[in-house]
Amino acid sequence: MVRIKHRYLLVNILYPDPQTSNVRLTAKSGEEVFYTMQFRQPSSEKMDGKILFRMIKDGVAELFGDYGAGKIAGSLQVKYFSQATSTAIVRVSRDHYRLVWSALAFATQLPQPLSQPCVIQVVRVSGTIRKAEEEAIRRARISIRRAQRASKPARTIVGTDGFSKTTDGFRRVQEGEDLNDSMLGGIEDTDGPSVAGEESDGILLS
Image (cartoon, rainbow, N blue to C red; front, side, top):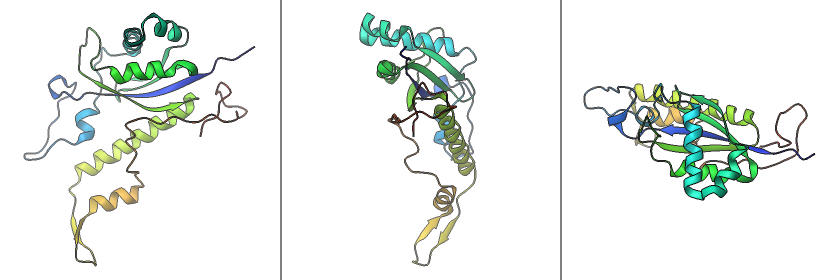
C-alpha cells in the first residue's frame, strides 16, 4: 500500500490597507507605526479556517480550472488557523502543493462577507506539521522582538573609528536576528530519510 505524502504550508495573512484595519493603531506625534504593527494584524472574528479553505479552493479553480480543483480536492485541509496572529497551516498532497501556493500568491482580497484587502505569504513548506509549527513559533518570537525594539528609542553612540552608530543595530546582532528572516519568497524543505516516532508521511525535512 502506498502512503499519500503531504506538504504543510505555513501561511501569513497581511493586511496592507489601514482603512480596513481590524485594530486601531496609534503612535506618538511625529512617529510612524512600526511595520510589524502595520501589516501583521489580527484577523477579523469572522475569519476562520473554513473561509480560508473556501478561498484556496476557489482560487485554485479560478487559476487551473476543474483540473486543479480535482487534484487538491482529496487532500486540501486547513490544519490550523489563528485569528490573533493571522497565521495558518494548510495541508495538501505533495504532488500538487504548488497549485495551492499559486492560488495564495494571487489572492488580493478575503472572500465574502469580509471582502478585506490582503496579501498572503507562504513562508515555509514542510513535510511535517511539526516543522511548520516550529517555524511559526520562531517567526512569532522575531516579531515580538521587533515590536519591543521599535518601542524603545535607539541611542546614538560614537565608536572608536569616530563614526556614530545606533544601539538598534547592536541589539539586532545580539539577538541573533537574521537579515533574511523575512523570507518573502518562502522556504521549501528537502526530502530525506524518515525518523522513527515522527509523524512525517515518511519524510524528514531539514
